Image (cartoon, rainbow, N blue to C red; front, side):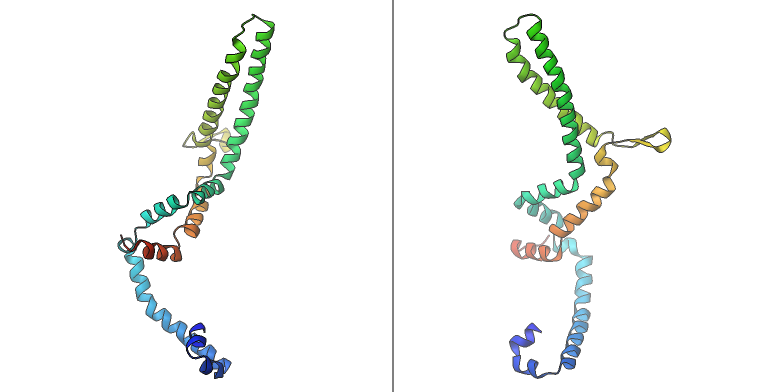
Length: 193
């Protein structure tokens, strides 16, 4: 319709609505017939036309925020889990740290102990909580089913691997590997695979 209005505005305006509808249907049919062989050829030879892996790498490198957003969206549950585990462990170990501080003030008078306690315990607590949270997220790799199938000991991310991979695939297809994006990439790089 835009082409007709642009090229032949008077003729297009003079046509009755039924003729316009018939012209549109005919053009759609002819377009499908002419594009179908090309579309099939592109599907068969996509790897020789376009390097999808390199296109994906280039897109993610040029837009790191997109990669971070995709990771955050896909792993939102796991990031919340890591936060909660780290907070719980940090609080528990902070209580131990408080106990050591109180013990030092009541016990032997070690002037340097206060200056060492906080940085060293902070280092240990930070390292331990991060290690534990990451370990619980990704280990064990394989499920260990116990108690008649009621308990599944497996990394929390790996438990929902199928769900997460489907979500990530949707994001990749909508933001990286889609028809318009592939065409833009081919035109901007000026080269094929």
